[in-house]
Image 1: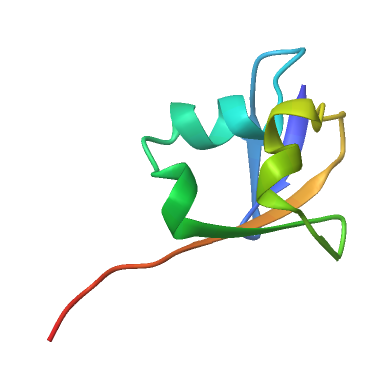
Image 2 (image 1 turned 60 degrees about the vertical axis):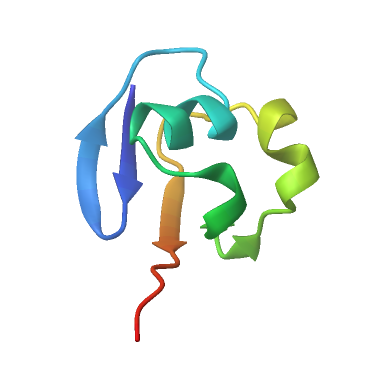
Length: 66
């Protein structure tokens, strides 16, 4: 299946949820903001959000620093 992730086309496994994708990218679920098809995704729904071919996803992860 093909999606656009942060402006780049990526091939991913079929039947992934948004939560699966975030885990596969080794990102902390509590430190990301996600937009899917121009709509903000609610963190509590990541596990129930099934990705589809052609989805456009933007993921921003927060990094602490000083």
